[in-house]
Length: 113
Length: 114
Image (cartoon, each protein chain N blue to C red):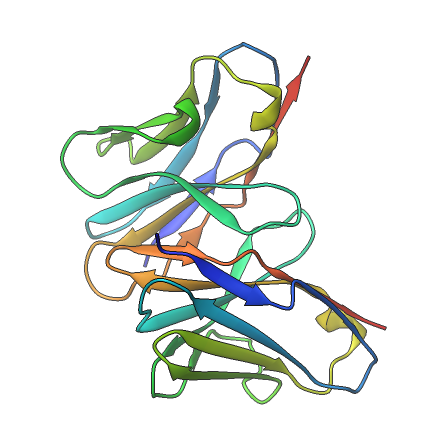
């Protein structure tokens, strides 16, 4: 149990375009979802925390107008990278919070050309 | 606020040898502690967690960890490793109360050599 999926698993987009990443909790309701960014050979950096039906809380230094997060239901959160640039290329991982734990999705590899 | 330090960025060991991955944390409140494993281009998989109770925690794949409050440590151990244990390992901490936000260590790259 407690499975989280992400779609797409990888995406290539051109500079200046926007891309949306979906995160779904498949067999549980996640009142809180988390979005992380991971650069090669580095740890996970928390970008934002989203609660169902309310605005996301962004970590310091994360541009909320660039990384739009929507938590429309208890099983779905989306991250939209707007006007993407090559420096936004990274591995994006979401997680769903349940009781004391977070359950992580498989990640989305974003490459901006 | 909490912080985590993983003392080794890389740990090479031979197959069937024991291994210990070290993790120290800092917190002014009670904590929950976690170890995750990440294989290349994948998300994180929970190995084990400490919430309360017995300080020796057993997890999946033969791993175990011991919570030491006085030394603020949560080291991960396995008595005999396999090639398939080659991966990145992350220690994480969160406060026992309040928000679920996790703080991650920098990771330890475990490489198993035949």
